[in-house]
Amino acid sequence: MEKREIRVAMLGFGGIAKSHKRGYERLEKQGVPIKLVAVCDIDAEQFTKAAKINLDGTPKWDLSRQKLYTNVDAMLKEQDIDMVDICLPTYLHKEYACRMLRAGKHVLCEKPMALSSADCAEMLSTARECGKKLMIGQCLRFEPLYLFLKDAIDKNTFGKVKYAMFDRLSSHPRWGFEGWYRDTARSGGAVMDLHIHDVDMVRFLFGEPRAVSAVSYDTETRWAVINSRFHYDDDKLVVANASWDESRTISFNMSYRVNFEQAEVKLESGKITVYPNEGEVYQAELPSADRMAEEIKYLAMSILEGTENVTNPPESAMATVKLVEQLRESADNDGKPVIV
Image (tube, rainbow, N blue to C red; front, side, top):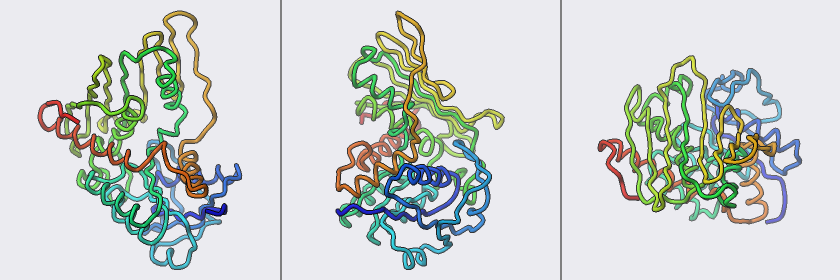
């Protein structure tokens, strides 16, 4: 494909979309040939109000350089766009991803890919039929805090992993269009919306487990709190926890601790500390990178250069959704292991 600028339209301008918007602004400053030209949301108030989510809450957003729409058909008719960035609620992912692909657009779709692996398969099939690229926003695959860990595992920097434990904890979301997070049928609960980050990261770091098991309990949604175990053929212990039942006065927290043969690595409060068995404790030096910007850039360059997505292919995102389904199956059966 001849090199040119990728023109992007965004669907939905709620909380996560504002983080995407910041990513486009950073890429423009870097000279990356991608431009957000249009934003569509059925609620015009989203264009002016702040949205407090786990990641951030910013009081003002400059949309003066984007054409704003409340009707997707009008946007598609008026705008010459190459790619659509879908930041809609989860229950709308399949419908709009397939619709945009059939309209001849490449698609970046927020995680989770869809509410079921069957819906994911339909999205994949549509992308293949239309000859367009589809990528899912599993942004931790572009996050330096997790890429440090990936590099240490792949290079055997500290020896083999003995155990790995991941936590992702939040109060129940009070934001979201028409309270969709609080409806399990539309959000999939914490296990699908929140826990999926660490489920995907476990697969990214360690490969496919041979089995999974989980226990959970329900609150406003099903599977609101879950403890998951990933079973591998070697003797390492891999566990992940997620919660939408933390106190509303506690801030969102993501962390991990990974015990290697020669050191322990901890992510706490946004910093990685390495505790060697011998030698001085130190904080890891990480590159300055925004995970949202990096995932957008990766897809844009794969479109421009005609390269394959090997870091975050949609087939892998579907496999992560499937693994979440198996964790729910185990949780619904008193933690009985499910063979993957």
